[in-house]
View (cartoon, rainbow, N blue to C red):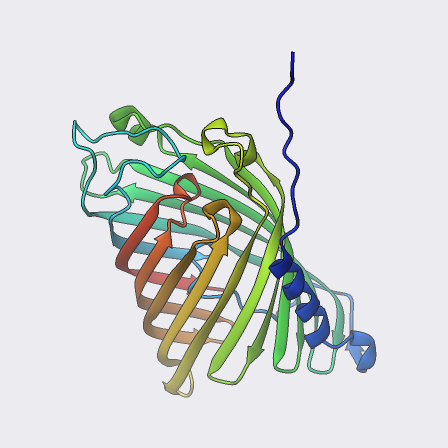
Length: 312
């Protein structure tokens, strides 16, 4: 009797090219003069997480008007489900809470214009339906990362190993008959950024080292989850309050192998108050493309909304 088919991963070319770029644009620390090293819990930060990326660990409250349930299934994702006999909901108000952040633990090296810092990131993202009395949990995403961030002048970068697991809400499954996916993955990714002053450009990619999705039979024998690409731009202008108050806007693009390399766009714009590396921002949101929720990674979702975002 034949055993289960074992799927092997192929290595996508574009993430490797990003890794080559990352190694070329950041000079070796040995080329500069070391000015300090071996510090625990440093106050410095060498890489700023992309502010428009929908799954960067942070503290945030969001209200979004979404069409994620306009179709109650995506091809291959799960069997169709229904809302009280209806096939789907054209659009509804949902809330999302993000709880997490980045703790910088050890600075093994510092040099003129930058250095190296190791740390840990954790984040939980919970999406809720707000138009039902029980505020049903739609989905939750849990992330743990171990980042290393570098800076050299206007260049900065980050490499990290990330664990991501996604879970569907029990209430949603009970009331609609939706089935959850076994979504767990580990990725190794890198990103490089260049800061022009008020505008920053960034780009990178990652390789998926393990994905439980590749064992989900309903996704089909040709399904693969090998990597992702990411790029974007963001700007912040602080002309008031001695450089503490101003406006910001950002655009983030991502494409993943698990979603057939279909791109998704996330855009934000709003007002911000900043004190050093800490900031609070009230801004408008827009997203179009495969949903950022892991349990709905094949479902196209378009939403508008607002959020209160805290970085520290």
